Length: 295
DNA sequence: TTGCAGGGGTCAA
DNA sequence: TTGACCCCTGCA
Image 1: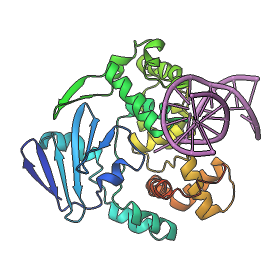
Image 2 (image 1 turned 90 degrees about the horizontal axis):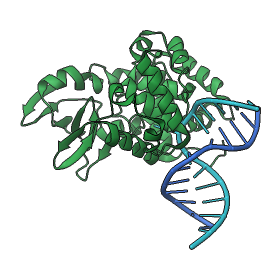
Image 3 (image 1 turned 60 degrees about the vertical axis):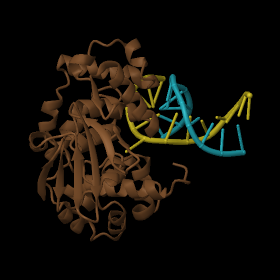
Image 4 (image 1 turned 30 degrees about the horizontal axis):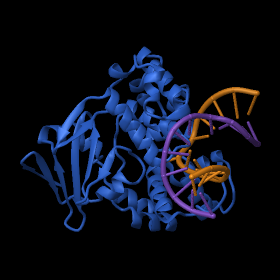
């Protein structure tokens, strides 16, 4: 990969395994929106960024940033130190994964902010993606900081300092329904230090999951999402309805319990379970695998 | 136009 | 193990 500085941005050349659509639409993030030109604009780490990938040329254009932020933030955010070619080669030994990877070959697992993901995935429970995004945007508008970019106003996700004194009524503004009380309690737990996200990140996966599930509104699936998408715990295999469907459809051929699926993934994919999950999730959703089946 | 099912799960009985 | 759950959309 070569990095070229341009006005208010960077060009990454000779970059592999990077497709903006796959990355931003594989279900791991809620704050990136597709523009008319096929690029994606999003808010992360208190900044607004626009990303466009040209897969044929192996080029990625990142607008509204600089070399320093790239080194300090975006290199890790886009997981650019990892060779996804190796991961895909290993996973492709399985024919189902080989097929799934063909459709999502440019997926990378973003390294997002734990606090934001904790709240985002609490909101995600029994909810639809447009509604989740809307609630997160409403919270950000109300309590985050505004940033202007290309004539539009964006809002950062509120830091815990900006958020922990917000009342339950103030949280209901985001229209997340019964999840609002969980958001409120989660903010208090994090602000008080009872839940220490930095410390949890250092724990092994089972201890981390246990700690996260002390937060109201966080069950096994939400905990696994937080660990996989913001705490570098790549063994995590979040089992939502889509992953359940695709695992049953291709591998197990029957109705199974969540725990059976977790065990299956751990046995089959091991260290790479989280990556496998993303390829399978993207594939299942794109092709609506098993969607007509009652779960 | 109205009504109803169902959605990135979790909680409580 | 099972139903309820806020809010909203899609569809009959």
